Image (cartoon, rainbow, N blue to C red; front, side, top):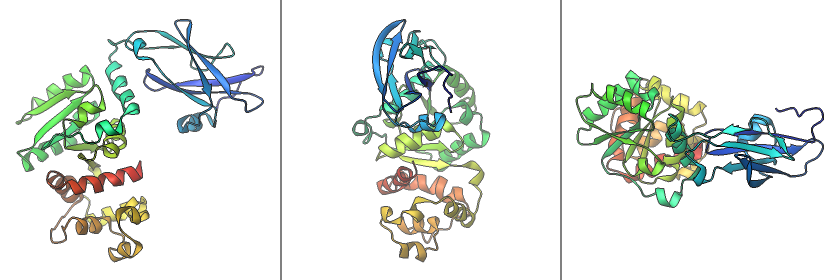
Length: 327
């Protein structure tokens, strides 16, 4: 919560995530009148914004409702250093001024990519995919995780005909990627990402590492929600060797959408009782796997789902619907 100065008539703050788009708030101290925020670039006013939105992140950060605003840096100013200021009644907001970043900044491409996630056209991205391709993000966190990279190796062993693809965002990731892949005995095709469409058009199955915040932001809330032909395999490596019974108990305690909202999956409460609230048993029944034995979580959720995803479009729609309910 931000406390206004003693003699202030209005107060507010600007929040920076990626230096390309900004959110903030501005309000009067003594009433709820909507305020106008003036945006200056290199000391020249380029925009005026009404602070009349309700933005969840601003509410959480500053405990302010209905006095937030959004601003996107115009395309012609992206890639160069500028002084950006946000003012209300000539008073600078907290965290202003801000220096934008240039194209040669090591974080520029990452910021631009993450910024592109906020402007996804659902119609443009929904049908994109590349058959028989399995991809993962080449973040430093993933590349340095030996267990995760061994899982990628195991995928190639079990599915030798698929093409493995790795997507990176910046040159630092590419250098590390080259080192890591030099120890692989099979080819991994690499791509530099500029936007989400670069990713969607090059893969059919994406591996999402649950411990990576970038993985979750990119894959769960963008690919899984918008792409009907791409299956997101959501892995949490500490669970890989859990029994399916133990895993079901975890899912029940996390309010899994199949259990809490069965009607959205063409199920009812009778079905949930029939399968003893077991998400695993519901999946096995749904995809005719009741006669197959799976010892561990990885056997079903990390490998069998890949097999199904390469041959069965129905599992993509069903599985990604779960993510839409969660996120």
